[in-house]
Length: 347
Image 1 (cartoon, rainbow, N blue to C red):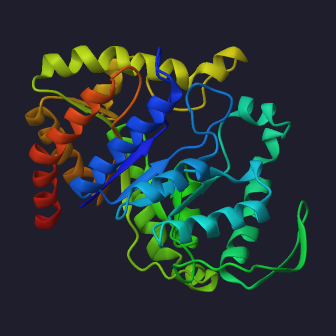
Image 2 (image 1 turned 90 degrees about the horizontal axis):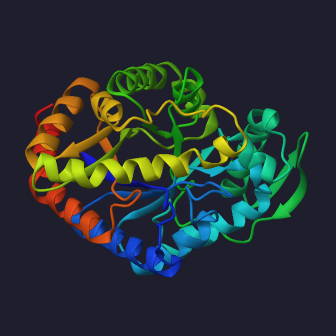
């Protein structure tokens, strides 16, 4: 069993941004010390949901403040990038981190964010497919040639090369019917999100697709033979169930309001199947809150049922505050991680 962090870095009410950045780096350093495998940063724009709209900038800072934990996005919004510029930044990051970069990519789900950039959201799937083609070529070839609908490159020199060969690992969100298939065809590690029953189905679909599309994966050139099957969970642990509930409940609402900020401003339904009601979110399994005993029992049961081998935790959100987040991580490290590791070994 491996463990990772999933992070929005949403706005902290009444807190200056330099402090938020500094304290989040300390949290990542503590997770590295605890043996966490990877840190995954989201990408969102023009919303208090994300104070890191340029993930490469923040990951570059983390690369110099850490030494072992892998650094990743979940995910780069490829339709919003010029692919050549992103290729160059990713090559820099893999070298700055001495080969610790993982690359999560996606097409995006928020029409308001695309509108801010003047990009047609209805074109996002087509733009993503072409951008990913260009990205992969640029990370694996010395010269970039591509002729498509939106981008054209003729024999462009790629003068840097990645530390990791043939390229840094790819990640993809296992959403809907197409997510598991796309990830399997391209040798990508996969992360699922949502209620327990959704995670279980997505991971089963992903495993089935991985077995089915081996030929496509070989043709793509993937070197991944043992993909990570991940489940993302929002987590908070305190000494007692009551204390955890008292702190996490308002923090979750604050985070959810940031999540919905642009959707509400544009008066459109939110496109994410995450309950706004805290109790419903906990009941679904997407949010795990409580004492170490409660959290341990819940996560071990979910791991047995869904069979994930990678647990990605949103440890910092809303109004929790740095001290509470560090305490929660420490309790997880000492009283929950060993049980999950044993469960995976037994499985």
